[in-house]
Image (cartoon, rainbow, N blue to C red; front, side, top):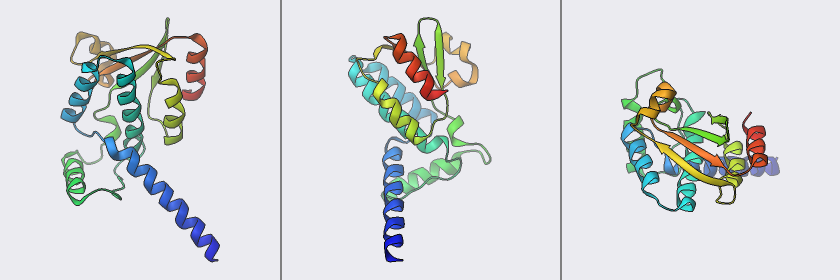
Length: 177
């Protein structure tokens, strides 16, 4: 019985730690999203852009599937108050994941895959494709006419992730579809 309890406790601890890590870069407001997109655009090196993108995609998983639930374990009292204030400002009944997140699209020649809401494990698996060996460039659109093409999903920005090789694109496609 004690062994089962220890295993259960260990699993809960690991889950809580992974959620806290994902929430480190939690972005809930339009202002935070705009600042993040501007920081991404300001980075000149592709490797730094990809590093920011990786962190954001993982952080987004804490919002995508949580709806109204956000685990506050591991946050300081000040950060908890900040998150609770942001949650209170949201309109009741609306999911947090649909509010302020860029539209991520993987591009290879004429084919495009949009990254919708993903689970933690998929976000982790996706990290191997977000390297300078696999990505040729990022195109970032925010507050530009191009966003009109994407409708509501483009209002928080559009990030085109251009992949170098067809085989990489096919592997990403298998992962996301």
